[in-house]
Structures are given as C-alpha cells and as structure tokens.
Image 1: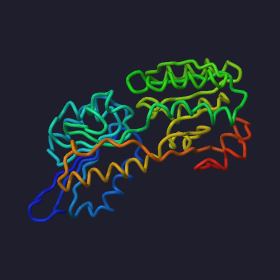
Image 2: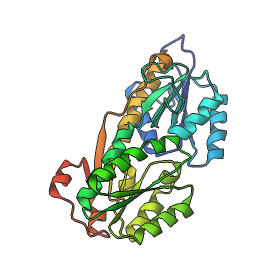
Image 3: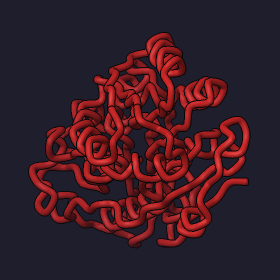
Image 4: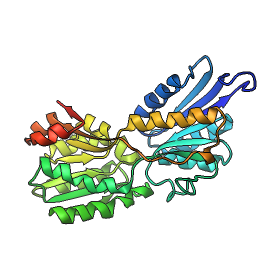
Length: 310
C-alpha cells in the first residue's frame, strides 16, 4: 500500500495519500485498513487510499506498480512477492512496506532481516521450516496416505525452498513425495487427475499466484477425486480444502499496517527490521472430511485446531 502526507508541517496527521496494492488474498485489505483506523488515520479525513487489485495477471501488476509510483505517495504497501518485485523495479526511493513474502533476503528485496537497507521493509510470510509440518496433520486425518503430490509455481522462486523440507518429512513419515511444477489450470488438472488414479494419495499445494487464483478449482477437483489436501493459508480451507496450516494472514497485515503508520509519522524503512510471522493457525474443514472424503478427524486434532469449519 502507498501513502503520501500533505501539509505534514502543519500537523502530524494531516491529509495523507495511501495506495494499497494487492495481488493475493483480499483479507490483506481488511487487515491493513483496520490497523490504520486504530492508529488514528481515517480515510477521507486525514488519509487518502488508492487500491489496486492485480490478481494473478503479470501485465496488470506491472502496470499498477508504475501507476502507483507515479502518484509519488509517502509509502506503498505491496503484497505478496510479485507486486513487490514490480514496485521495487519502479522505485528505489519511495518507502515500501510488504507482507506475505517468503524469502525477502533471498529475493533481493532487503539486505538482511535486521538491517533491510534501502527503501523496503515489512513482514515475512514464514520460514521454510513450516513446510515440514504440512504432512503431519494430513497423515493424522488420513493415515492411509502413502503418496503425496506437491504442486508449486516455478515463477515463485521462494516456493522451491519448501520442497526439500517436505520431502524430508515424507521420508520420516513413510510418504513418497512427488514434486510437480505447474503454470496454469491445465497442468494443475493433469497432476490431480493422475494423482487420483494412485491409491492412498494426498495433495499439498504451495501458495503462489497461480495456486491462489485457482484455489477453488484445485479444491473442487481434489474433493471430487476424493484426495485429502492441505494448504498453507486459511482461505484454502475456507474454499473447501481438508486443512490448512500456516500464518494468520490478518495478523500479519495488521502488523504491516503498524509499519505504514510509523513511516507516515517520519520513520525510515531502513531503520525498521523485517519481522517474521509469529501467529500460526491450524484450520480443519470438518465438512470436507466427512463428505466427500469420508474421513474421521481425531478428537485430539480437533481440540488442537485453531478453527474447525463445520
């Protein structure tokens, strides 16, 4: 998101212009807006917000990045990696806050987590180690699973960081893990249809622009094929996936909103360390478990879940 303060010399909370630039889940918009209200910014009174929604269209994302930087705001908020990369190409001077980026150092967005340098800082999605935990609830709910397919979008560089950890978890739990790169709906459909012919199979999907945009298609096809699935983010379970385990997205966006506030009040991105996600949640879709999958979720796992969708 981006903002520009006007008449800042007159009063600290003078009119500001802020542009939100989202490509992923729309939950980010609600999270950051809530933080702004709590910090004393009121849209239409001392805050001007311009939203852009790039979806998974690279051309649209690129055009919006150029459009928003041309507004010369006080701060830009971009999430996740794809729009952030385009904003970085468009400006090296306007302060930028990000959220939901898996590997900001490896992707070249910041120099280090403690000392980001430059004009970019924010909140990382999660460490790659979380990928090692996705098989555990999948096996607890569907203990017969002995083969799991992992789909990921190679256009998202950070996605490959999860693969070795998922494969290691598979070896320790007796699950053969097959990795498939996917670029579009056709390739996703091919993987799921082939997997459905295998006995005792399950599906793990690493979040990316393609996977997020096509989540309802993926979940629907997997459920029709009676394949248990687990994803990283809650909105996949909301869409009908068996389970999700990962960060609390709304919490991450609210925390990112606090950095936007601090920058609007005069702090520099280079002085604000990149922070990691601290709040994780396990969500189980009990409705999907019962039908169409015909699975019984252990009571201990239900008790441990942060949310159960019935």
